[in-house]
Structures are given as structure tokens and as C-alpha cells.
Length: 86
Image (tube, rainbow, N blue to C red; front, side):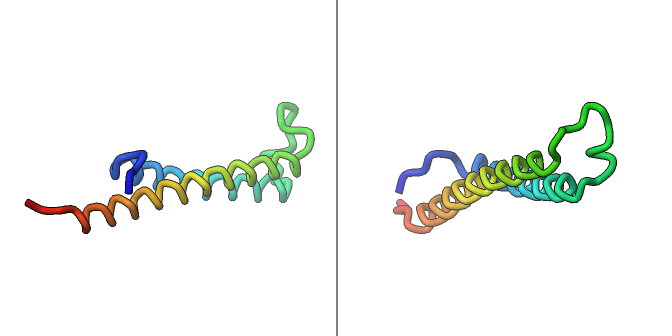
């Protein structure tokens, strides 16, 4: 099978995607709960629930990247096991 990214890039992408998912989900939950430090200032968003929804949507995008990069890691592992050694 052919891969699109190298094993190092796939590992880095997987780790960053995992961290991004955690951060965005926690930020989305904070906006959804209307945490005072995020919602009570002049420059804050008008609709915190809409902002929370955007955070959750971005977390889904990061989850797709995590799935793709994890599959790339599995393909690299599969190819290294089945490689012909001379």
C-alpha cells in the first residue's frame, strides 16, 4: 500500500490532532457552560452556544485528521512487516 506521509509526520500529526481535540472539546464545553471569564467581556462572542458549536465542529475535523494519520501509521507498520529483506 502507498502512504501519503512519512511515519514521523504521521506520528506528529496524530499527537497534535489528539491535543487539538482535547483543547477544542474543553473550550467548547466552557463556552457551552457560559464560563464567566469567556463570556462576560465586551470583546467576547455574542452567542456562546454558537461558539461552542464551532469548537465542537473543529474538534470533529481534528478527529478526521487523527483517523487519517493513525491509518497512515498502520500502513507504515504493515509495509515494514511485509517488506522484502535482502
